[in-house]
Length: 274
Image 1 (cartoon, one colour):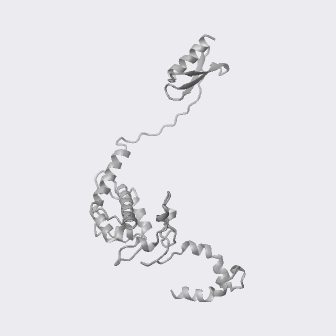
Image 2 (cartoon, rainbow, N blue to C red):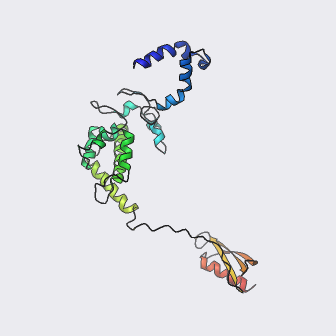
């Protein structure tokens, strides 16, 4: 762009670029103001990449919203971290963008069509990446597969498409011709395994505290733990009166049956025989 070339020739001279303390060199009011806004400028800037770009695919600032690595959790293999943009762009006749490998690639477009997206759905095919993700992950989006909500199907689809793309680029594995069917099957399996068929019960918060026994009574509280059901066990008990005052306590260590009922009986027997 012309304005970028003008600024580079005027302010990014060889002397300034090679200076040890470039920020201390004399400069005009315009350049001083530009340096003050450099941090904001960097946040909003991005590289325009082509097919032969050697920008880092994960860490390069080549898409809106910052590096892709900031959007995902979990580790990457050493080989995967070294991937460049040119390694991931395999189609030669289509415009490249961040949404291209997830939606606009010819092979991926066929998957979306098989999943029920229509050619005439301009909102789906023309929106940018951020708008596309937000729109299709929304719970207000239209359900397209009976009981399977579109937002759920869409999430599984982009994950499986991305996974298939990486396997093609990194491992040379051909894309599964039945990828859309695999997406539907995984989504259905998740729905029946992870989603409860019952209606959600209202959450009730119950306060738990020690309650005093009636006047003239005493209360014994016991607790215990064990290493397995037949290992070393420990148990203890505390006796309080109807005013909550401590009266007595004890603890035991035993070997054998570690069931809670057995531990409680030991405590009771100990108090009765003390």
